[in-house]
Every structure is written in structure tokens, then in C-alpha cells.
Amino acid sequence: MTPQDASLKSAEVCGLAPVIPVLVVKDVAHARPLAEALVAGGLPALEVTLRTPVALDVIREMAKVEGGVVGAGTLLTPEDVKNAIAAGATFGVSPGATDTLLDACEAADLPLLAGTSTASDVMRLLERGYTVAKFFPAESNGGAPALKAIGAPLPQMKFCPTGGVSLKNANDYLSLSNTLCVGGSWVAPADLVEKGDWKAIEELAREAAALPR
Image 1 (cartoon, rainbow, N blue to C red):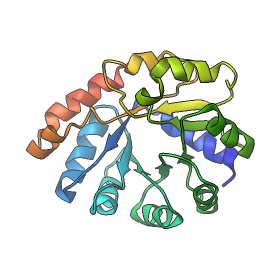
Image 2 (cartoon, rainbow, N blue to C red):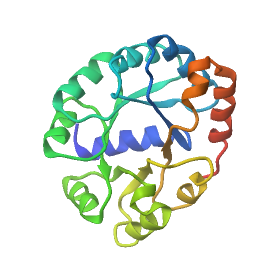
Image 3 (cartoon, rainbow, N blue to C red):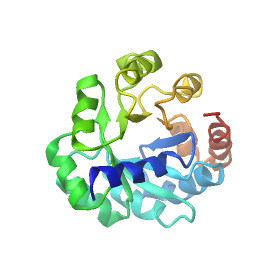
Image 4 (cartoon, rainbow, N blue to C red):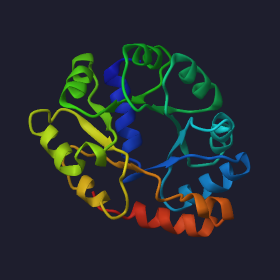
């Protein structure tokens, strides 16, 4: 997969809804009902971070949910890429970008939202052929004003900002011309997941899906 094709696929994923839920799931039993609640609420693109021992099993379960588009987050190595694809992930997300990781994703035909935090990061990805990336950690790196400033000299790159994004500030990002969607964990808070309150999570998803962009 070329960087250009990967960017087109990433843009398609970002175009599915204003918000991509960023999920840290500790219990496989929560995987399917959580995915079903988020999809029912209008958020079909789901990022399962590889931060728990059961993350790959969670991806396997979520990949079975009709209407869901499941990706793997926190990709760091070629082994992560291989395992994520085997589990059923159809897109990847990483906190940064290395040539080794980009090579692995391109060879495996996995579109990647590679993390950027500076203009130099963005320029390196543009040089390689990417036009869609992740801005991370968004709030710690200056938030929406910083992303707007980066967009002035580098309008070719479109972003999914993640990290500190919430319902309160999501519109600040979504109103920017260089933002395709945002990533956030607020739609699946740990306490509601632990209680199995899928109806409440579906309502949070519905609220997020209605955000203007």
C-alpha cells in the first residue's frame, strides 16, 4: 500500500463520524457489547489501544460486530502490525512515526494514522506521501490553536487530533479546516464500561456523533 492509498483509506475512516473512540479495554467480555453500543450510537470507527494484555482478543471480538470498523492503536513495532491484522484490525494508529513502522504498515496494506506533534513531523510524513495523520497529544501540544497554526504553512495535511480531547473542546478542533475528526476516550468512560451500562455509552456516542464538522 502506498502512502497515498493509505491516506485515502485513513480519510475514509475519519469520515465515518466526528469522533473515533479511543478504547482501553481490560476485559474481553466487555468487547462486543461496548462495540455494539458505540456503533448503535453512530460511532462505527473504533480504536482499540494495545495497552492491555487482552487487547488483541478485544479486537477479534469487536471485529465481529456488524457495522463496526475496528483499528488497533498504540502500534509501535512491525510485530504489533502483524498481530493487529491477524486479530482483524483494518486500520492502525500510532503515537509517533518511524520508518520501520511505516514500512511495516505499507508492506502489510494497513492504513496508519501516524502520530505527529510538530511541523517537522508533518513535513516528514508529507515528504513520504502521507496527507492524513494524528496530532498527539493534542492538548499538551497547544490544542486547537497549535493545530490551526500548523495548518497555515502545511494545509496539505489533515488530522485526527487525540489526547485531551473531550466533548467540551471537540468543537474547537472540528471547526478547523485541517481536522477530519477527533479521537477521544470520553465516550466510553471506565466506570460505565465496568458497570456494563451500555445504554449510557450509546447515549454518549449519540451525542458525539451529532457534533458538527
